[in-house]
Image 1: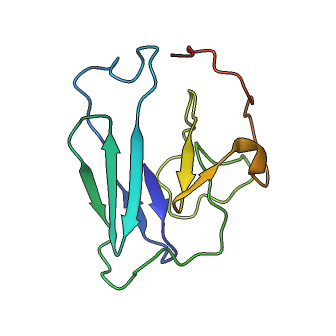
Image 2: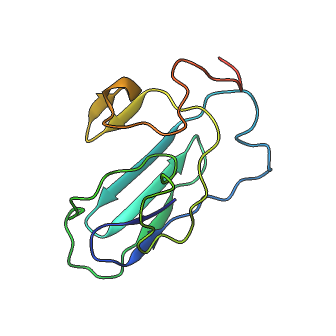
Image 3: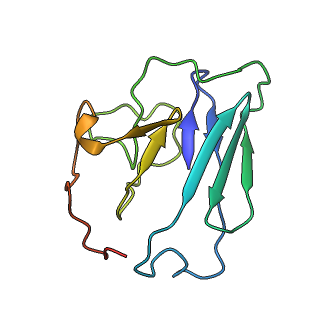
Length: 123
């Protein structure tokens, strides 16, 4: 996962997996990303939590008026300091942002999203 919290410095955290098929197994998985102070934590299922630090030490919260992109960037979005433009391929459900459940139909805009469709399975 990569991002920019408003200071134009990239913030990146990666989770290693025991197998290339850990997440590609036709089952739903739990992914939790939390930004707190200058640290981003990523927790995937039962695997160990991984950490990324912004390294600036002076941000208590993300300070940007830019949109929040989930799963990738639209073609016309500026990349800024992001290290990749690769998009997520898969299914997402039960999304929570800022402790509030979000539905895809509530999003301002959607790009390449198939609502109510998950070709990889419905477990």
